[in-house]
Image 1 (cartoon, rainbow, N blue to C red):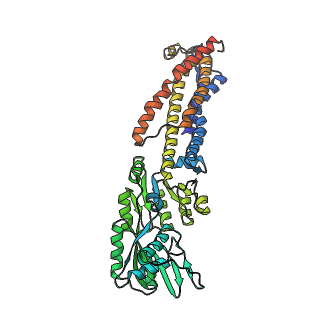
Image 2 (image 1 turned 180 degrees about the vertical axis):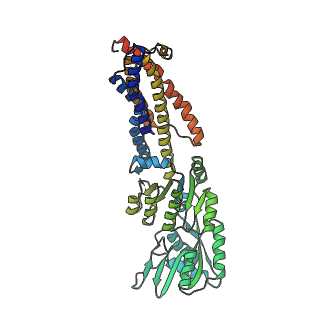
Image 3 (image 1 turned 120 degrees about the horizontal axis):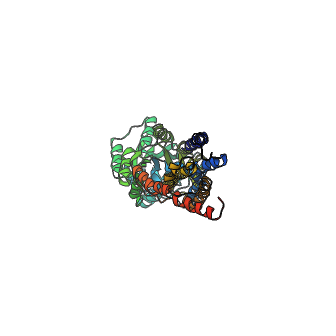
Amino acid sequence: MIAGLTIIFLLAVVTLYPFSVYSVASAGSGQIASIAVLVSLLVCLIPTTIGGLLSAIGIAGMDRVMQHNVLAMSGKAVEASGDVTTLLLDKTGTITLGNRQAVEFLPVAGVPAAELADAAQLSSLADETPEGRSIVVLAKEKHNLRGRELSESGTRFIPFSAYTRMSGVDLDGRSLRKGATDAIARFVAEKDGKIPPDFQEIADGIARTGGTPLGVADGARVLGIVHLKDIVKGGMKERLKQLRDMGIRSVMITGDNPLTALAIANEAGVDDFLAQATPKDKMDYIKKEQSVGRLVAMTGDGTNDAPALAQADVGVAMNTGTMAAKEAGNMVDLDSNPTKLLEIVAIGKQLLITRGALTTFSIANDVAKYFAIIPAMFMTTYPALKALNIMHLHTSQSAVLAAVIFNALIIIALVPLALRGVKYRPQGAARLLWRNLLIYGIGGIIAPFPGIWLIDQLLVWMRLA
C-alpha cells in the first residue's frame, strides 16, 4: 500500500511540471513551478510519516513481548501474532494445571485391585512425570506397595513416546505397559490377547467426568485402568472468551480420548479440540487451517512438537523444552508458561492497530497537505484558486517549505505514540475501522492546516521565505 501511494503521488507531482508550463503559457502570466519546489512537494506527500515510524512500531512490539519474558526472533513474528486466527493450545499445562494425579485403580472383572496397582507401579518407577510419581504414591497408600529397585540385568524401561502413547518396563519375561486406552488395546491385540468387555465401559465412565483413563496391561492381559484427575485452570474460560472477542478460534490439542477431551473442552470453553493427537496430526491440522487462509499459532516444548512449531505462523517454544523445539519456533518463552501466548497475541494485535492508526493518520495528512499546497502554488497563474487558499499561505515557496518542516516535526511528535502503542480493546474489524477513521483520519486531515499555517507565518516573519 505504501509503495502504491508513493507511485500515485509521484505521478501526481511529475505531471504538475508540464501542467505548470502549459498554464503559464496559456494564461500569459504566473510562475512555473520549480524542480526544487516539486521535489519538496513529493517529499511531503509520499508516506514518509508511516515509513519513518514502522521501525519504531516493530521495535516497540519486540520490547513489549520482552517485558513478558518472551524472546522474539524478529519483529515479523510479533506482527504475525496479531493476525492469528487459530490458536492451538496443549491441554496439559496450558488449559489444565498439568499435574494430573492418580486417584483410583479400577481393575477389569477377574483381576484383583492389588495386581493392577502392582503392575501400574512397576511400569511407573522410571516415570519422572507428575502422573507417574502419583501412581507410585497411590499404590503405596492404597495397597502398601513400596517402590522397588529394578536394576537387575534384563530389566528394560520403555520411555513414553508421542507415537506409541505408552510407557512401561520389561522384566522377568513380563511386558508391563501403561498408556492411552486405545494404545493399550492395540498392544494387547498384537500379543493375541482379548479386550475385556468392561474395559471400555470403565474408560468411558472416567472420560465423561473429565478424567483421563490410563490403561494397564501385562503382556496379552488387560489388568484395568488408572483414573487420572486433571483440573482446568481458574479463569481459563474467561481468557478464551477474550480470544473469541479478538476473532481468534481456540483449539485444544490432547492425547486423551475424545470423551475426556470433550469434557475438558466444554469446561474450559475452547471452540474445538483435537483428541488422540500425534505429531503428524498436529502438522496436518495446521496445514489444513493454513490452506484456507488462516494464520495459526501454537505452543510446544518437545522434540515431537518441533515440526508443528516450524509449520505454524507463530511458534512459541518453552525455554525448558528441547533445543529442537526452541530452534523450530520463532519465539521462546523464558518463563515456560504456555498461557503466555494469550499476551503475545494481544501485543501483536496492539502492534497492528498502532500501525493501522498511524497509517490512517499519515494518508489523511498527505491528502490535507496536497490540498493545502496546490492552491498556493497556482494562485498566481489562476487567481480563482485564491478562494481555495483558506490558510492564506504567502507564496508557493513558503507553503512547500512550511509543509516540509511540518512533515519532519509530525514524525517526531508521533514517535512516542508509536513506541507506546494505541490501546487495544477487543472489538470487531468494522468498529475498529470507524474508530481509526474518526480519530486518526479526521485528526490527520485537520492537523496539517493549523500546523502549516503557523510555520508559514513564522517563515515570513523571519524573512526566510
